[in-house]
Length: 277
Image (tube, rainbow, N blue to C red; front, side, top):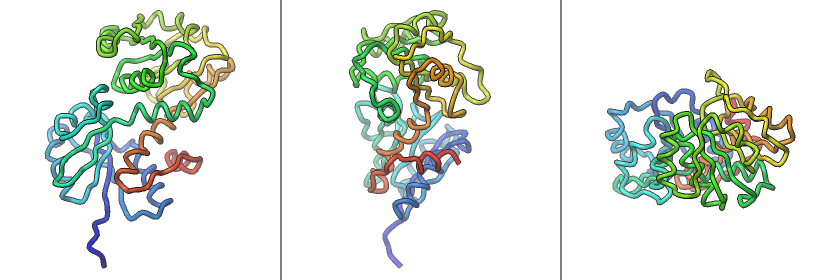
């Protein structure tokens, strides 16, 4: 017997049963022969602070955070990274000595790494990025694109006011257009990113006209259920390089796993297969 505690991690949200993160982390724990566990936890908003304060005493080294808690956990963190502050949300928490909470956001990192992996010839400086949606995922994507050197982000959201608020936060490199203009603007974009839930299983389809797509456009969709959305199918049919959304889920998980369990996992076909089980 040993007195060393087995490290525990997990994902908190509500609902949480749909999350693929437990499949992903369980695969890595097996692959690298690590004694640890990763647990899904359905946590009500009213219980969030109490749960976060209790987990370190139970042996948890950290957790991932998903909807609807990504913004609220920021209030309980003792230290917050600059990128999480800019995005206004955290998806990765690390529990330190005496239960202090370190908050980070790795969604933007996951997005860029997935994009570079799936479209290795993509160049940030090649031209504008058209981003559809102005929710929390959009904030992470925009932050990553600006950091990567994209000259302009053209932002369109069904509710224009939300897009205008993002422009206030990010400044002159954001150009807001009405949702009805998105289709006619597609031809300007070197990169098209769907950050909305449109096209996801059980949701309405993306209503943007795609006539302006051409083979020089890189198209990526954050939706990964289905893995090949109608947006990606339409883009591939005109010769675009397409990148599905599963890789963002995989890559965003890498920094947290490394901090919690001491091993930096690799993304390979076995990893993708494990997350799709």
